[in-house]
Length: 249
Image 1 (cartoon, rainbow, N blue to C red):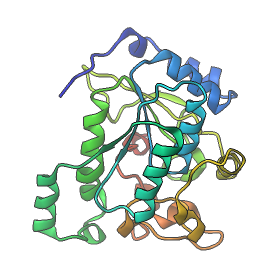
Image 2 (image 1 turned 135 degrees about the horizontal axis):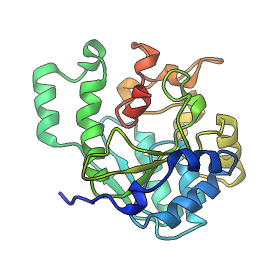
Image 3 (image 1 turned 90 degrees about the horizontal axis):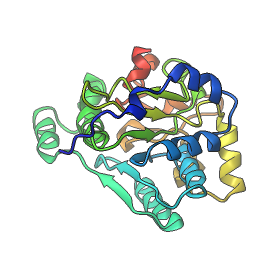
């Protein structure tokens, strides 16, 4: 595995100062800063917010690094979105996969739906976090579509720019950008409609937050969007491991 050593760019950033400076700036301005500051930076893509970021970033540079994780449990509509985004933006979309031996061992020992009894962390750890960790070991920074209003329990305090405490190590520091942190769902969807951005067709069926098929369901009117994810668990634990630092904060 290629290891990327911490650079002065990463270690010398003053995150408190950057947070104050960029608090009132637009997502595009945050993206411009991120893409100018780091050559080896990747956008994590899975949902509507991420495609908005891809759309914005594609208007800044054509040298985009975009990745997504195929857990093996996604909806057909999600796979179709992958291809639409690839074609629409003419980009090389990197698809990451979990370790097949780890998946086989989990299914052999606990079956296909152990997360309904044992919570989702073990399955997400194997299918999502391990591939993500493998990817982040090769980049200096990454960009996510997190919003503060997505989850009052785990995302209300996410910063626009931060050191990623979940995936950084002593030898490899990773900077994490959340350009849409201050945006609402309404702003995201206004952008999608205005710029004709590709989106997951499940949104037309009442799905708001979309993950793996067994762990995602449509929500009712006035239900919070994260209520459709891991609905059998406590709301304060509704992170798959991508943003474990949210739970620590």
